[in-house]
Image (tube, rainbow, N blue to C red; front, side, top):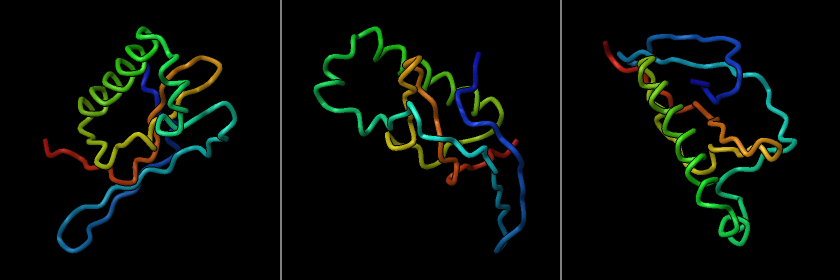
Length: 104
């Protein structure tokens, strides 16, 4: 299973006010060919086939499941944080600023 997220360059953690903070440094992503799912034009979204919408839903849910297997919760995930790559029509997750590490 592919983990559809930008390449992770580094991780950091520190204790702050009694809780542990975790940070992720991602590759810079050029926005060429990518569009936020939220910004997909309504008509364009209506034209997208059911199969395409199911593909996006599957890719998003598989990526979230994989993150959960790794003990990571995508804490502030929203439509702005899902990019669709025009060439492949693949859904990618971005913006892991609200990531929470699950205890375990």
